[in-house]
Length: 525
Image 1 (cartoon, rainbow, N blue to C red):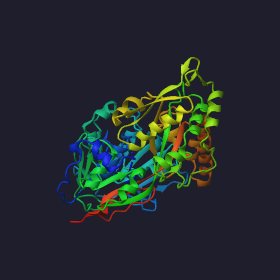
Image 2 (tube, rainbow, N blue to C red):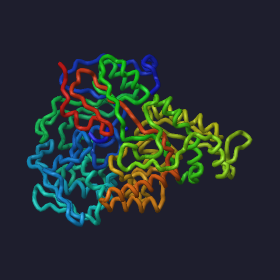
Image 3 (cartoon, helix red, strand yellow):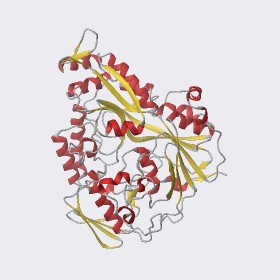
Image 4 (cartoon, rainbow, N blue to C red):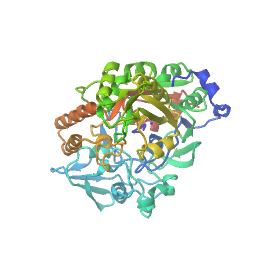
């Protein structure tokens, strides 16, 4: 699974806080795996979903042309072999495996592949994947099993992007109004092509998937995977402790405690993810980079890592993970320096008023800091940041919101000053989606960051297959972003997957997590 995809309470405290019926007696189980999570999916359509909760589910349902092995090497999936690439690097040709079936029994062909990427590139759809495939000029299907991508220009990011399962069934989606994609029933009852089939989705309760006996890669060894939606990470972990759930994600703050549970195997790994404060650059508070720099200096990241993340994460200096090839350490660092932070705010015109709160042109520096409910780490972060910025003379109101409200009412419409959030990144160096000012390209540029040089560097890096040149471009991107601080980068995440010991053959590795190891899971009966 690619992105698997989006906590200092003690066990006894959790028991006193959760509703009595949230900790039910463990049910009798068969050959299925119960996964306890705390976020409801939004859309079970991988071509349009942008949240980790949805991606977790669709990762079992949909496959891509390519995939990655346990060493992160790109290998064929639905493709018979790696694609052929023309000398001018503007034509990419795939041959599909024959006999791949959609879950409703219809054969998957080149027409589905062509349709899916044209669907993503249709601006009426507003797909977050648009940037990944924007260099595609046209798609040809000379026969049922051949797909030819004609590019506007070379695009080195395209091959890694083909590892994601964004292909959807043409025979179902071709008659859906492109302006009403979000309203389609197929987002709630998806027909995929992966190793598991959709059974049901009861919002705020569960999502049920069952093994696909006709999967071209062989039938999974477990019969079902059942996502149980809980109110919070804390409750999800309790379900794993009591045996009600077989599988749970464990954040840094609870890893040591969960390792003591006799019924669990706990697998710790580096995640391709970071947590941050993301600023709305158009907010009157954060339009000046000196203010953003000041907050970065005033945020004691090492104390946060040591305290909230229990020393398991690592202080972040950017969005590029230190373990990927494109990472550059040659960037400005923002070690804790309260005096420097105060100096920068003074220079930016935010002076301390008589009441101790900074103000500028008669406006008090008071803002709302958002985050999503149920993520214990982020809930603690907003409170900690509130206390840190109080020392600067900045008044922060933490506001913790339900996930769907947080995302759809505030984050996506850019209706915020700042929020504490996190992002999962890619194994390659392209981070166009985070920093490009073109809204068609910078889908996750939720703060409206804009820098012409960064746009140029990101565009140029995708045009070349020369890795050394790419590294040069991406290093400069990282340096500029670190200087301008559109986000205060806090921590490179680590995490753990906790599995009941009845689930056998589990494998978890750095950066990939469980990857596609679920195909080999078995249940100890």
